[in-house]
Length: 266
Image (tube, rainbow, N blue to C red):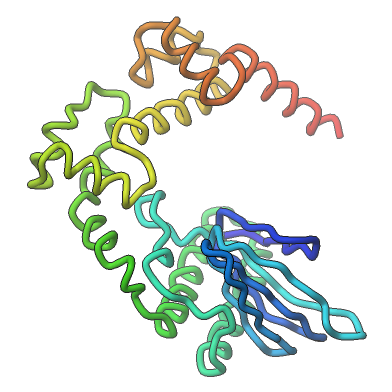
Protein backbone atom coordinates (compact mmCIF):
# COMPACT_ATOMS: atom_id res chain seq x y z
CA UNK A 1 0.00 0.00 0.00
CA UNK A 2 1.45 3.36 -0.93
CA UNK A 3 0.52 6.92 -1.73
CA UNK A 4 -0.87 7.01 -5.24
CA UNK A 5 -1.16 9.66 -7.90
CA UNK A 6 -4.14 10.35 -10.13
CA UNK A 7 -3.65 12.22 -13.37
CA UNK A 8 -5.99 14.63 -15.12
CA UNK A 9 -4.78 14.13 -18.68
CA UNK A 10 -6.81 11.73 -20.82
CA UNK A 11 -7.72 8.11 -20.24
CA UNK A 12 -5.37 6.01 -18.14
CA UNK A 13 -5.35 2.99 -15.83
CA UNK A 14 -3.18 1.50 -13.11
CA UNK A 15 -2.30 -2.04 -12.08
CA UNK A 16 -3.52 -1.31 -8.55
CA UNK A 17 -6.76 -0.13 -6.96
CA UNK A 18 -7.04 3.56 -6.07
CA UNK A 19 -9.12 4.48 -3.03
CA UNK A 20 -9.46 8.16 -2.21
CA UNK A 21 -11.47 10.83 -0.44
CA UNK A 22 -12.21 14.35 -1.66
CA UNK A 23 -11.11 16.80 1.06
CA UNK A 24 -12.20 20.02 -0.65
CA UNK A 25 -13.51 21.13 -4.02
CA UNK A 26 -15.23 18.79 -6.46
CA UNK A 27 -14.38 16.56 -9.39
CA UNK A 28 -15.93 14.29 -11.95
CA UNK A 29 -14.66 10.77 -12.57
CA UNK A 30 -15.38 8.99 -15.82
CA UNK A 31 -14.81 5.26 -16.28
CA UNK A 32 -14.73 3.30 -19.51
CA UNK A 33 -15.74 -0.36 -19.70
CA UNK A 34 -14.00 -2.90 -21.98
CA UNK A 35 -16.93 -2.48 -24.40
CA UNK A 36 -16.33 1.28 -24.58
CA UNK A 37 -19.34 2.49 -22.57
CA UNK A 38 -18.62 5.49 -20.35
CA UNK A 39 -20.11 6.30 -16.95
CA UNK A 40 -19.53 9.48 -14.93
CA UNK A 41 -19.61 10.23 -11.21
CA UNK A 42 -19.71 13.65 -9.53
CA UNK A 43 -17.87 13.88 -6.22
CA UNK A 44 -17.73 16.63 -3.62
CA UNK A 45 -15.95 17.07 -0.29
CA UNK A 46 -16.45 14.01 1.92
CA UNK A 47 -17.09 11.58 -0.94
CA UNK A 48 -14.97 8.44 -1.19
CA UNK A 49 -14.16 6.74 -4.49
CA UNK A 50 -12.79 3.33 -5.44
CA UNK A 51 -11.20 2.77 -8.85
CA UNK A 52 -10.38 -0.86 -9.46
CA UNK A 53 -7.11 -1.95 -11.07
CA UNK A 54 -6.99 -1.80 -14.88
CA UNK A 55 -10.23 0.20 -15.06
CA UNK A 56 -9.81 3.06 -17.50
CA UNK A 57 -10.55 6.37 -15.85
CA UNK A 58 -10.49 10.09 -16.56
CA UNK A 59 -10.64 12.80 -13.89
CA UNK A 60 -11.94 16.35 -14.29
CA UNK A 61 -11.74 19.20 -11.76
CA UNK A 62 -15.21 20.77 -11.56
CA UNK A 63 -14.72 23.25 -8.71
CA UNK A 64 -13.42 26.79 -9.10
CA UNK A 65 -11.34 26.61 -5.93
CA UNK A 66 -8.48 24.25 -5.20
CA UNK A 67 -9.19 20.55 -5.29
CA UNK A 68 -7.68 18.50 -2.48
CA UNK A 69 -8.00 14.76 -2.13
CA UNK A 70 -6.15 11.89 -0.52
CA UNK A 71 -5.65 8.73 -2.55
CA UNK A 72 -3.86 5.51 -1.70
CA UNK A 73 -2.85 2.70 -4.04
CA UNK A 74 -3.54 -0.85 -2.96
CA UNK A 75 -3.05 -4.25 -4.57
CA UNK A 76 -5.92 -6.35 -3.19
CA UNK A 77 -4.38 -9.60 -4.38
CA UNK A 78 -4.81 -13.23 -3.41
CA UNK A 79 -1.59 -15.26 -3.58
CA UNK A 80 0.16 -12.13 -4.90
CA UNK A 81 -1.51 -12.75 -8.24
CA UNK A 82 -5.32 -12.47 -8.47
CA UNK A 83 -7.13 -9.20 -7.76
CA UNK A 84 -9.90 -9.88 -5.24
CA UNK A 85 -12.04 -7.05 -6.59
CA UNK A 86 -11.93 -8.47 -10.12
CA UNK A 87 -14.64 -10.92 -8.99
CA UNK A 88 -16.97 -8.13 -7.86
CA UNK A 89 -18.99 -5.21 -9.16
CA UNK A 90 -17.61 -2.41 -7.00
CA UNK A 91 -19.21 1.02 -6.86
CA UNK A 92 -16.93 3.85 -7.96
CA UNK A 93 -18.62 6.30 -5.59
CA UNK A 94 -19.09 4.57 -2.25
CA UNK A 95 -22.38 5.05 -0.37
CA UNK A 96 -22.31 7.38 2.62
CA UNK A 97 -22.47 4.52 5.14
CA UNK A 98 -19.25 2.99 3.80
CA UNK A 99 -17.65 6.33 2.92
CA UNK A 100 -17.50 7.45 6.54
CA UNK A 101 -15.79 4.23 7.66
CA UNK A 102 -13.38 4.35 4.72
CA UNK A 103 -12.57 7.96 5.57
CA UNK A 104 -11.62 6.90 9.10
CA UNK A 105 -9.40 4.12 7.74
CA UNK A 106 -7.73 6.47 5.26
CA UNK A 107 -6.99 8.91 8.10
CA UNK A 108 -5.35 6.15 10.11
CA UNK A 109 -3.32 5.18 7.05
CA UNK A 110 -1.86 8.69 6.98
CA UNK A 111 -0.78 8.28 10.61
CA UNK A 112 0.74 4.85 9.86
CA UNK A 113 2.72 6.32 6.98
CA UNK A 114 4.61 8.46 9.50
CA UNK A 115 5.72 5.39 11.46
CA UNK A 116 9.51 5.06 11.40
CA UNK A 117 9.70 1.36 12.25
CA UNK A 118 9.46 -0.51 8.95
CA UNK A 119 7.90 -3.67 10.41
CA UNK A 120 5.25 -1.75 12.33
CA UNK A 121 4.46 0.38 9.28
CA UNK A 122 4.08 -2.70 7.05
CA UNK A 123 1.88 -4.42 9.65
CA UNK A 124 -0.33 -1.34 9.99
CA UNK A 125 -0.70 -1.07 6.23
CA UNK A 126 -1.75 -4.73 6.01
CA UNK A 127 -4.38 -4.36 8.74
CA UNK A 128 -5.76 -1.12 7.32
CA UNK A 129 -5.81 -2.61 3.84
CA UNK A 130 -7.91 -5.56 5.03
CA UNK A 131 -10.29 -3.20 6.83
CA UNK A 132 -10.64 -1.10 3.69
CA UNK A 133 -11.25 -4.19 1.56
CA UNK A 134 -13.93 -5.34 3.99
CA UNK A 135 -15.81 -2.04 3.69
CA UNK A 136 -15.57 -2.05 -0.11
CA UNK A 137 -16.84 -5.64 -0.36
CA UNK A 138 -19.80 -4.80 1.87
CA UNK A 139 -21.02 -2.40 -0.82
CA UNK A 140 -20.21 -4.76 -3.71
CA UNK A 141 -21.83 -7.78 -5.34
CA UNK A 142 -20.21 -10.74 -7.01
CA UNK A 143 -20.13 -10.22 -10.77
CA UNK A 144 -22.27 -12.97 -12.26
CA UNK A 145 -19.92 -13.17 -15.25
CA UNK A 146 -17.04 -13.90 -12.84
CA UNK A 147 -18.68 -16.72 -10.89
CA UNK A 148 -17.09 -19.43 -13.03
CA UNK A 149 -13.71 -17.72 -12.70
CA UNK A 150 -14.11 -17.51 -8.91
CA UNK A 151 -15.03 -21.19 -8.77
CA UNK A 152 -11.99 -21.97 -10.94
CA UNK A 153 -9.73 -19.98 -8.66
CA UNK A 154 -10.85 -22.02 -5.67
CA UNK A 155 -9.93 -25.19 -7.54
CA UNK A 156 -6.44 -24.15 -8.62
CA UNK A 157 -5.40 -21.84 -5.75
CA UNK A 158 -3.26 -24.55 -4.15
CA UNK A 159 -1.40 -25.13 -7.42
CA UNK A 160 -0.77 -21.40 -7.91
CA UNK A 161 0.93 -21.35 -4.52
CA UNK A 162 2.82 -24.54 -5.38
CA UNK A 163 4.14 -22.97 -8.59
CA UNK A 164 5.22 -19.84 -6.68
CA UNK A 165 7.18 -21.94 -4.18
CA UNK A 166 8.63 -24.43 -6.67
CA UNK A 167 9.01 -22.52 -9.96
CA UNK A 168 12.69 -23.54 -10.14
CA UNK A 169 11.85 -27.26 -10.11
CA UNK A 170 10.86 -29.61 -12.91
CA UNK A 171 7.09 -29.21 -12.56
CA UNK A 172 4.71 -31.72 -14.09
CA UNK A 173 1.60 -29.96 -15.36
CA UNK A 174 -0.13 -33.33 -15.71
CA UNK A 175 0.35 -33.99 -12.01
CA UNK A 176 -0.80 -30.46 -11.18
CA UNK A 177 -4.00 -31.07 -13.16
CA UNK A 178 -4.60 -34.38 -11.39
CA UNK A 179 -4.27 -32.70 -7.98
CA UNK A 180 -7.06 -30.34 -9.03
CA UNK A 181 -9.15 -33.28 -10.30
CA UNK A 182 -9.07 -31.80 -13.79
CA UNK A 183 -7.95 -33.05 -17.16
CA UNK A 184 -4.80 -31.45 -18.55
CA UNK A 185 -6.75 -29.44 -21.12
CA UNK A 186 -9.36 -28.29 -18.59
CA UNK A 187 -6.66 -27.33 -16.08
CA UNK A 188 -4.97 -25.25 -18.79
CA UNK A 189 -8.25 -23.48 -19.62
CA UNK A 190 -9.21 -22.78 -15.99
CA UNK A 191 -5.72 -21.58 -15.09
CA UNK A 192 -5.65 -19.13 -17.99
CA UNK A 193 -9.15 -17.85 -17.21
CA UNK A 194 -8.16 -17.14 -13.60
CA UNK A 195 -4.63 -15.72 -14.00
CA UNK A 196 -4.51 -14.58 -17.63
CA UNK A 197 -1.60 -16.96 -18.30
CA UNK A 198 -1.31 -20.59 -19.29
CA UNK A 199 0.39 -22.76 -16.62
CA UNK A 200 3.59 -22.82 -18.70
CA UNK A 201 3.54 -19.05 -19.25
CA UNK A 202 2.96 -18.48 -15.55
CA UNK A 203 5.90 -20.65 -14.49
CA UNK A 204 8.09 -18.95 -17.08
CA UNK A 205 7.05 -15.53 -15.77
CA UNK A 206 7.90 -16.57 -12.19
CA UNK A 207 11.32 -17.83 -13.28
CA UNK A 208 12.17 -14.69 -15.23
CA UNK A 209 10.95 -12.28 -12.56
CA UNK A 210 13.01 -14.08 -9.92
CA UNK A 211 16.00 -14.23 -12.27
CA UNK A 212 15.83 -10.46 -12.71
CA UNK A 213 15.86 -10.01 -8.94
CA UNK A 214 18.86 -12.34 -8.58
CA UNK A 215 20.81 -10.51 -11.29
CA UNK A 216 20.35 -7.20 -9.48
CA UNK A 217 20.77 -8.42 -5.89
CA UNK A 218 23.67 -10.88 -6.27
CA UNK A 219 26.95 -11.43 -8.11
CA UNK A 220 25.91 -14.79 -9.54
CA UNK A 221 26.84 -15.31 -13.17
CA UNK A 222 24.18 -15.48 -15.86
CA UNK A 223 24.65 -19.25 -16.05
CA UNK A 224 24.32 -19.64 -12.28
CA UNK A 225 21.26 -17.42 -12.27
CA UNK A 226 19.60 -19.53 -14.96
CA UNK A 227 20.34 -22.71 -13.03
CA UNK A 228 18.94 -21.23 -9.83
CA UNK A 229 15.56 -20.45 -11.44
CA UNK A 230 15.27 -23.69 -13.39
CA UNK A 231 17.05 -23.05 -16.71
CA UNK A 232 20.33 -25.02 -16.73
CA UNK A 233 21.08 -24.16 -20.37
CA UNK A 234 22.64 -20.64 -20.32
CA UNK A 235 21.98 -20.04 -24.04
CA UNK A 236 18.30 -20.92 -23.70
CA UNK A 237 17.98 -18.84 -20.53
CA UNK A 238 19.60 -15.75 -22.11
CA UNK A 239 17.42 -16.07 -25.21
CA UNK A 240 14.17 -16.34 -23.23
CA UNK A 241 15.22 -13.56 -20.84
CA UNK A 242 15.94 -11.18 -23.71
CA UNK A 243 12.63 -11.99 -25.38
CA UNK A 244 10.77 -11.26 -22.11
CA UNK A 245 12.63 -8.09 -21.01
CA UNK A 246 13.90 -6.82 -24.34
CA UNK A 247 17.57 -6.89 -23.28
CA UNK A 248 20.12 -9.56 -22.35
CA UNK A 249 20.67 -10.60 -18.71
CA UNK A 250 24.09 -8.88 -18.75
CA UNK A 251 22.64 -5.58 -19.97
CA UNK A 252 19.74 -5.85 -17.54
CA UNK A 253 22.17 -6.15 -14.62
CA UNK A 254 24.33 -3.30 -15.91
CA UNK A 255 21.36 -1.00 -16.48
CA UNK A 256 19.98 -1.71 -13.01
CA UNK A 257 23.36 -1.03 -11.38
CA UNK A 258 23.80 2.21 -13.32
CA UNK A 259 20.27 3.27 -12.37
CA UNK A 260 21.00 2.61 -8.70
CA UNK A 261 24.24 4.61 -8.83
CA UNK A 262 22.52 7.51 -10.56
CA UNK A 263 19.77 7.62 -7.94
CA UNK A 264 22.37 7.44 -5.18
CA UNK A 265 24.38 10.34 -6.60
CA UNK A 266 21.28 12.49 -6.92
